[in-house]
Image: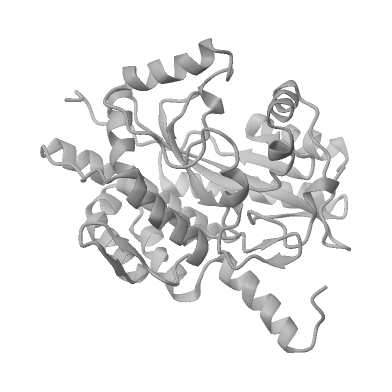
Length: 360
């Protein structure tokens, strides 16, 4: 048993796409001064991404949801203000509606060069953005135990965050098309289950010693023990267009982790389901988002998504109160009522077509 309670600190990483305010197309070669100025204002909290038309931000280590919200709002504002000086803007969505991946330029960094050399077109197609949420869990063994249990909730979290219905000018019919692009890479998708941190490390070491990856940062599962920090890193999310949505899902993630830890203290645990069953829900979240329900793995039947989310909110209410994020958690019900960014994007497109606009 872990001797002391985890820190439950948190951090958020978001990736944005940079668009020209006149054409609304991606800027494939933005001026270097954008990154320079963002880093002057925010230091290492702003960084380049694989493609030059992307930019990444990361909050500091935060002690509360309120602190994380303030830091993320500041980072979003800095990127907005700096890019506006160049006639550009960031968009917080996981795909661009019509941009072409073949027209994008790679960022010249050794790590990105190596990735592109290894993965070829699979890497060059990564014109996608996501949100990563880190929850501070200081004990290695506890991180593995909680990851094993938390995998169950990944489809629910994805469904609440979807923002990538379009790809290269087509409505894909999926609420989250992003993962169809990302899943082509190795070491993606649902995490493996491990009996201990040592077992996890042994598997990683096999790949490192064989020269197949540099380090554990090149394991890109939907949920992983962070290789850089003592955290559980949830990577399943599309990036949320709305700041309120993003913070609500950060709060929900944090509360789920604390709930699982609380069960452990009472010698209980969440049932660990097969990867096959969780994968089915993951696909349904990609395809339908919140619209068609997920498989209730305990009952073995499809259940309306709102019912499943309500059950989770009740489960973690105690944790939300302890973490002082009950209002942020309650915002999940707003997402259920008015839809995600993917719903809004599709609605704008369909309304324009109904008014006689051409597909282009």
